[in-house]
Length: 257
Image (cartoon, rainbow, N blue to C red):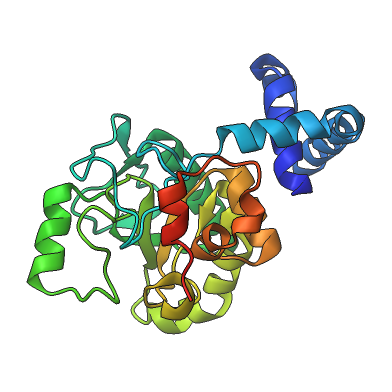
């Protein structure tokens, strides 16, 4: 959690003008962050921890950490995010019918695709992004099984926070399973993205889907990465939620054998 808390502290005590004044090289930024984190963590770690826990929210439809599953659907099944934007396609081959994400997710995705492109000189292929309620109704009713697709009202794509991606090459599974996928697994959390369905039905209640990435905010993505946990594992591990308010009836749904 060190990285997550350091991120919160710096985000809240460093002004935009100060950040703009920094020369953006890897060394200068890392030195600046390290200095600030070192100076501030000694006195502010507890405050940062409390802020992280206070703002964490798996219940509200608009939350970046909204948890959806077959047992935990949207409060408003026809929910539509109010801050959807079209994501930047400069480093993307877009095949999504609706190339939209929520503003924060779109900004983070753009940064991730830029850095991926610098690393591999490859574009990210987007197969699917935002889906409406009606899109999910059509998808679920026409062909998709419950072990593979989310039930109606339980899709992360409807949240405007999920995107299905792969590398734009003919044999993308072969390539993605090597260096490309390794890079994504090792770096996506730095931009706030996780793979919700990474451990299979016994853990995540859905089939593994290596191309799926979901934005949850950098501190939470960092926590999951450092603990090697999927989203479902984090939710089912009730001891980890001592300081997080969860509706009691919802908590019972997660007590699965």
